[in-house]
Length: 216
View (cartoon, rainbow, N blue to C red):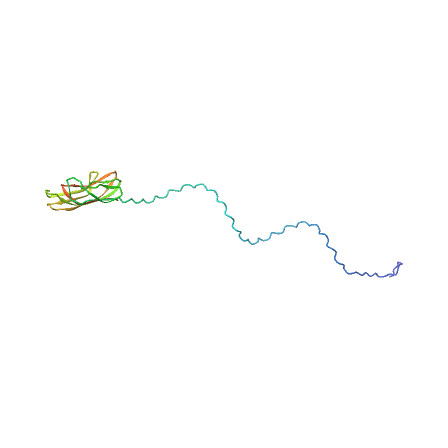
């Protein structure tokens, strides 16, 4: 086909590209875009090391006093101090019928509840309680006694002869002697109380006499 346009003879134009030039300078930063949606929560991290212990806080105010507790059980009773007396009389001394044996000395005295004065027949108890008394002596009839003869030795408490602990000695001739012994436990409820050793049945000589009294 032929070109119907009257023109210069057709020529094919050839385009030639040159080398790429250097990059231009960076443009200005654009405006910040909208914040994106929050991402999913990550997994929990490992527990950190324990921190240093803090300083001790100030002491709080004293609380109200609690209720009184129940009373405890009663403790054992305390021991009682020793109360004891020993009186004696060595020389032979006559004691008439119904008379009391005299003790001229004290050998031992502990505590203040049992007392005896020298050359006295009476032992005084000043504290209520239970006591033990023990007596011994050598007994012999006096000259001119009528035989047979029986001596009765007993305790008297506040002037009342005590049947407990009494002893009895029989003599059939002059020059005889025998050892009398008597013992009893007695209770004192009213003080002061007086204890004596009483002789009955006639007049007798008492020697080497000893009286022991102590609290039990």
